[in-house]
Length: 148
Image (cartoon, rainbow, N blue to C red; front, top):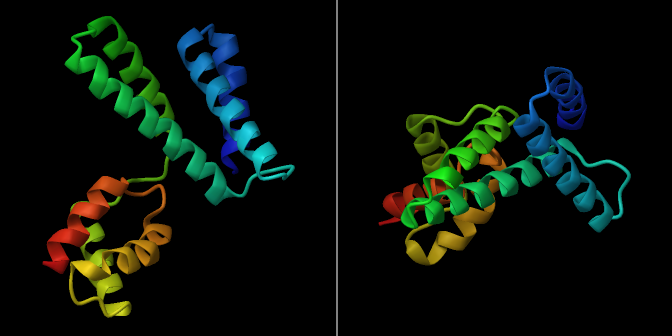
């Protein structure tokens, strides 16, 4: 089932349950997806494009969460944590460190990378393989570790 269809189902259920937090998050994500479709001049997004939008929404909230924790705004921290949990429910299962390490090593061999100078080549080949399944910062760290 496409992510948009799942969002529509969950939005209806959130309305029935009067779950304002979940309803608000779903509406924001759907709006982001519609904006992306308009930007790309498409009627509907592919599943990969939907994952890109979800990942972007998740990253924005995680960045904000970090800022709010530093500013000791506990009222906003708990709200954002709830939003993050809701969005993560629509993301694919995250890769374990071992699985990600295996994919990183395999990709480094595929592109025949020798040093950190080849980092861009490795990352451009690797990111489509792990899209939505691992955070870019985690991937970046593993690539650097394996290239040094």
